[in-house]
Image 1 (cartoon, rainbow, N blue to C red):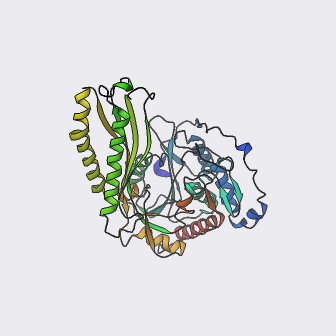
Image 2 (tube, rainbow, N blue to C red):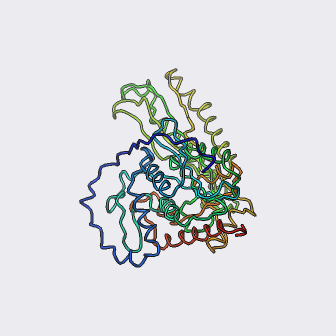
Image 3 (tube, rainbow, N blue to C red):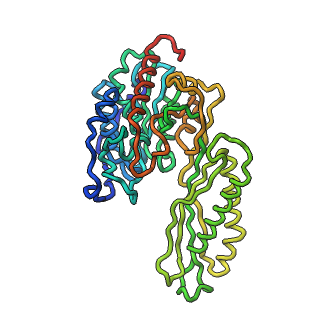
Length: 427
């Protein structure tokens, strides 16, 4: 990768500890030989997916063990890679180019992190994947390590490329697309112009031409502690937070009720959701602190701004004056934790057309989850979302990917390699 010869940092994996769980007490894994034998066409991709899933890359920890594994595999095939690390060096993106340093490359993009398993009723250890009923189970199987695995298994076949294939692996996608921006900045600045980016989120191998944007926020309420028999003197942070959450819930209901357009999304409107709330000390103490984490998944950037403006006005004009009449130090503060833009491909997007021809599946659809496609698109790279598995299984206990989806992604990559090996670039 000629443009990325600035060296890689010294290796030093920091593996996040996984939550403890008594997986030895759950049902034993079934005999899977029949399932695997019937799917030998994608046996290598199956094995690679299992290897990647076995590396715990929950977002709260490090992904460096996986990064080092991929670096070693690339090195075995004579491919150099660039790390684009986090500020603290605990996590890293990874970029690699297979083939010539030419324009017309195709980016295969995937995030290495997965969501937590805490509190979920898994049938077995989620980081020790198992096969049953034609499915591979484990955290990250569909979201989205199978896509990464398929790309890695295809490395030996990426020979004599006339146009390059780029791998772009990010960190912290699951907590707000935090890692990808610095990686995409490097790609846009240092790689020759790319023909397309394929973001391998689970779409059932269908082309996705649009996704919603996301703004993730934390609101902290500071009250004033008193004995709970003296509520007239105190400011309850928990009860103020409850009013703010109710305001957001009412706003979400209005967005749903006022939606008349057929936007193509499901649901067809901008949504608001409060996912976590924490506060209070004891039942007999008026609470001093409470915080909640929430998100806006917007079809348009203007939707998120309008809602944020209304929330801040409600805090400023109604909530804060009432709080400070009881205690001057009371307050409400909201910070943006992460944001990623919405994505909508052009009607004649070369990326969408490319993937439709590679998969043989016509048409495209829109999805309500956020992804890194909007970031690639904003960098001027034609982008499409397409990958194996279904978002319906993502983030669930006993997450899985159907084995026939491994066949599908292997087939698509085989045709992509043939395309990049050919003189003519018509898909």
